[in-house]
Image 1 (cartoon, rainbow, N blue to C red):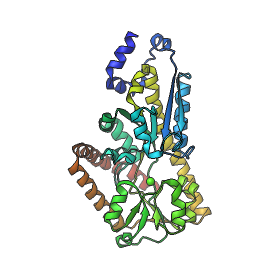
Image 2: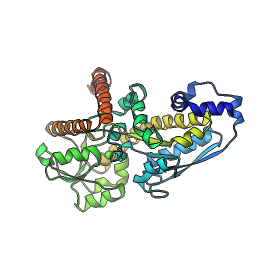
Image 3: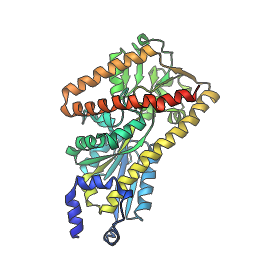
Image 4: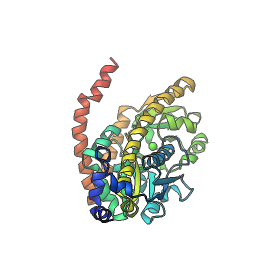
Length: 365
Ligand code: CA
């Protein structure tokens, strides 16, 4: 008991130590003696069993249960089953659920800088997001941003680079963005608006019909795997790349801090280590499934794959920088996070230019 009180008093120190859980010696008799059982609820922003994202949350719960020998069991709820998708953060802050799984950019109305912890236009790739979060100070900034709400964030999945989206008409120049009605959330949507388009917010289930009936001219969603499952190729002919708006989207686990601190240390370490495992596993799943689905879309469904012209990308990049600069001018935490990402990205880009980027070009020689 004394040991437990000491651990609880350590607060974030435990959190830091717990992130290296698997490299530590098991705590032996003390942990084994704590046979208490915990039952948690995890709410998600995804439809139940949604490919890769919802199934990732289910896999997380399965993994925690197995690693803890059943001492921590987590029941996963799809969007709307316990709380609506966009109330997941508040549900964890209030303790209605101990955990949530979603994407940080959904909370940008509450925390202006939140998008940096999922994806910002022309920002970090999946590999760079992990490097920045774990080794570049990103995770500390993320914890700081969420701390006032009594919740702890953890990276828990990544979609990899998304696609630019589905368009009913070709985009030949930046002028074609004017008047374009497109489902595109977040900062990407703000950028489209500055380019003269009309961003529309639609939940996943509404996208297909809106695109098929012409209520919208275009939509971005995720990547080939999820886009194929939604049948978006039946509603629009042109499939554009790259996903400038979401170059490597991190998914998140949100943990109620009080509930976390009530866990014995080994269970705390299991929760954070399983988040790390899912963070890794989901990116592997997306990479494998997206590659397969892209072949299906092009070879079986005759989808027209198109790269955005350079002048379109240049314009979008210019406008993205403008939107982000304005955000930094309004909010000191946003400014600090932006500066951290900016400095990291500059170094990382210089390195990747002579590493992965250069290598991929030579592989295609
Ligand atoms: Ca997307």
